[in-house]
Length: 177
Image (cartoon, rainbow, N blue to C red):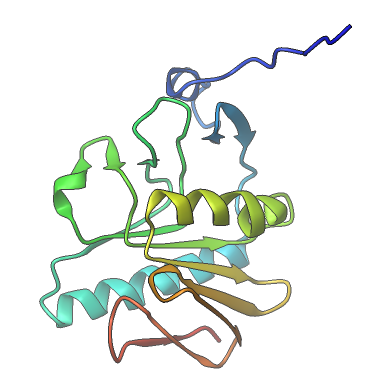
């Protein structure tokens, strides 16, 4: 007899119903609780945000940059809710007070021990299929950046200290020390 276990599908409402201070992401109806980020994680996040913010500001860019916690409603359903570490959105019509509705142009995830397989596999697939143009995985443990430029179908790896070219901005590089 063919018996299928029916998994409970969670929705964005379940995310909003979490107790204050509890953070989670929702991927295809499954909840993934998020641990508090480490000091190193926060230092890298703050540095990346500042570099990107200053680049956009100094070049009179239209794009906006947000650091987590910032909601990204990736698909037009209530089964996906992400909080990338850094989101760059160039189509500001996707933005409202709740967050970004649709794919950001550029997403950066900073790997923590508990999120490694999600960042390298699940989110890579979700971001690519949703239309994110560029996805960086910053791995503090390996001191490495994997830069996926989906519109050019490329992936390059860089060590910390190397200039990483930004695919969506010609001539802009970021060096993570």
